[in-house]
Length: 189
Image 1 (cartoon, one colour):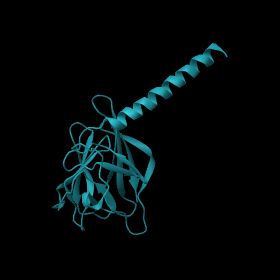
Image 2 (cartoon, rainbow, N blue to C red):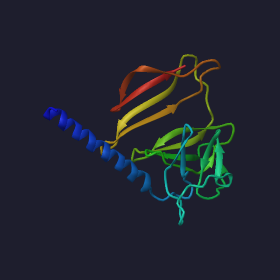
Image 3 (cartoon, rainbow, N blue to C red):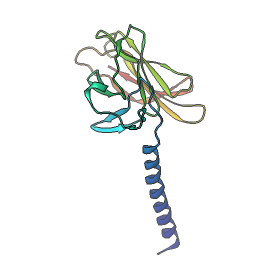
Image 4 (tube, rainbow, N blue to C red):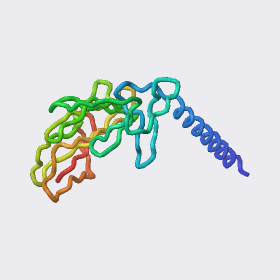
């Protein structure tokens, strides 16, 4: 075997061993769940526990008494929670860069959650309850922003601005623009 091939094989073996160990470490060293934080994330049928529930058994329970269905999606909590109905403009939830989510209340039926505020640390997006507005035909309907935090972490945020008219779909354009130092992609009805 050539020296370069041996070196590459060794690097690939070390990387695989590190990645497996690193993945195992991450899955077993979760931080504690906050009281209103969902403890489990459902990724297309695969359940991923994102934080440890308090107590001796840190597993996220999987029963109806500790879950809530919000916008057709099941959210699992460590303990039973009673979610109040938000007022328009209230922060309904916060989503963190590491997929963790705290839910404070549920938007009323005539509103929907929209990303509104990116907190100062740039890794948390707050969703507020807003009444949907209608987009003009062929109007701007969504913005996807790409940027970086002060420590170099890449961020991406998707905001729906309005609802397209019936039978129209919001489609993202392939071209992007730079706005205030951030790369943006725009969607149009």
